[in-house]
Image 1 (tube, rainbow, N blue to C red):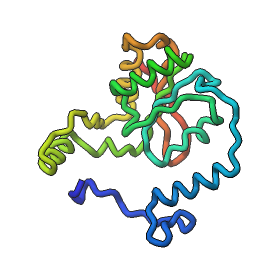
Image 2 (image 1 turned 90 degrees about the vertical axis):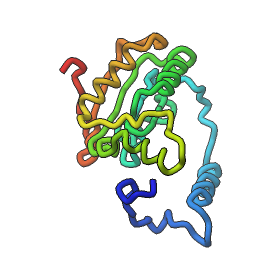
Image 3 (image 1 turned 135 degrees about the vertical axis):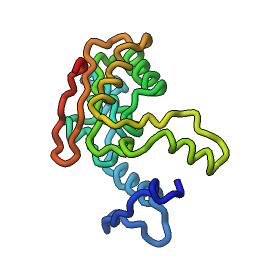
Image 4 (image 1 turned 180 degrees about the vertical axis):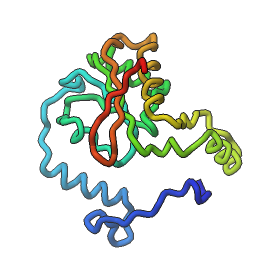
Length: 187
């Protein structure tokens, strides 16, 4: 968005991540991939997660899910979007994960200090004013992260497309301590 309220805060770039010689951030990421590929060897895995779990989480850059959950490559399916919202597309991904690739558990991870806590549906109206078309999607903003996790658990548990809804658990990740706090779905 072009309004100051929706412009991301400027953060200093770490020197080893700085864009050099007029390149773009994407150029730097492609360079990093070449270094990665030089040392890469095929782990011989298939697409089925070893732990048979799918993790739905916010896209927030402060969440290093693999490190925070002690996961290794191949352990889980990871589905991320703004807020970790259980949208139709998340249900689509979970359905494929369960029905085609064998997952049985769903872990939902929201977090403290989420950007969706400060947005409203007015965000869509501002976009409509700017570009002349209102987005078809909902912002899915919220005020109470615990209640939002409960809503997400309910959306998963009531989906007619999912085979396994008995092991659906929701958590809030504290971005200042790194700890997960489990949310009681009935509270």
